[in-house]
Length: 211
Image 1 (tube, rainbow, N blue to C red):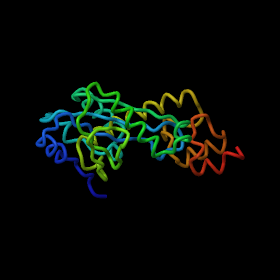
Image 2 (image 1 turned 30 degrees about the horizontal axis):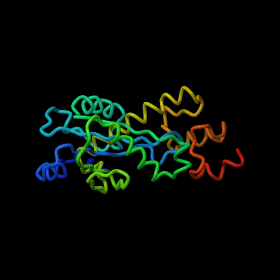
Image 3 (image 1 turned 30 degrees about the vertical axis):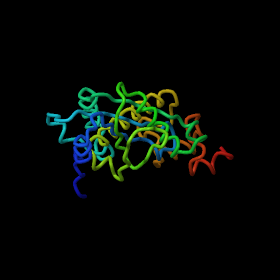
């Protein structure tokens, strides 16, 4: 398996040279899950960061939970500002996952303590946010600010899923975090669909009428 790509600062440096100073990276976690919310992270990182942790930042999907938690602590302590947006399963079923994801990102930007002057977004464009922006394919692997946002989103969502595990015992949400694993599907077949499941997502949509 090839080593994970180390995200760089090329996008941020180009924007700093153009006069932008508050550049926010954005990413989401939980888009493909069967249960729970979609969560977005937004973060404005300062230039000239120092510390061994900086070189450890990667797309959150390739990091262990322990390393994500470690990096999360450094990121939020060093960030100029960070914000989190949460859109629950009911809204996801009503809006659809793409609009719900954009809404979570909009919330995350609104929760920043200072207004960004440019957005670097993993893959998406956000037409409802009247700010200059760029959607970058595989941005969480290539762009440092987006990678940091991916860690914020993932850690924030994992913590929420652990809380929901206590509210909805027996689904093992703290273990699979709502993804469609074999364990999760077995739990659904035994217990049925809970109030936090996304009823418009396959295969739950076809199961809903009979569960």
